[in-house]
Length: 213
Image 1: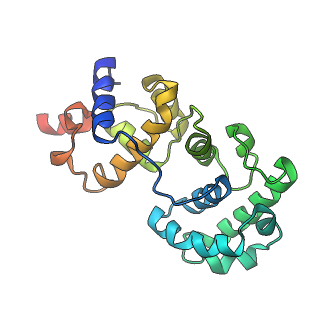
Image 2 (image 1 turned 180 degrees about the vertical axis):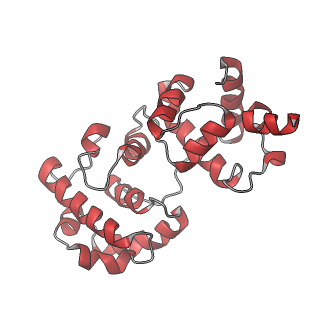
């Protein structure tokens, strides 16, 4: 596990080189982001951004999506991974929003997880991005980067989340989430990480072990 000095080095590098990270999902309101995050599971943000405009033009409000069937939604998202499941999640989510929350996307992560298709990661993304809640969302990129760097040895997303919460102060967690995602997406990629051009390789457990071999 990283010591405090190493963690501060990582934070300082990100603050300098990525001062204002934001989600790459395109959205205009909490409802639009919730739709996009549900669609983004095991799918690229680029593909989601190509899909959501037509979908949200057809169903611009929660109530209109709640009135739709999965079969009606499917044609708009058929290019997305697992479109049948996600069509059911989207319509179920919308109906739950109308029934439980008067059509408004809640701020609390626990409330968000009452919606179909919304797990802990999705709830934390919405809560942190839209409402700046001090929660850490752990997706596949965050999970991989945290373990490679040595920020966590956790074997589950929840275990990694708890370690990251110890490393990053509450107010920093929304930014740290994006730092790790973007670093994993463009530098520390799953198959061919760009270690030689990585600005935090000196703090990376995996890289330092490789150098010593």
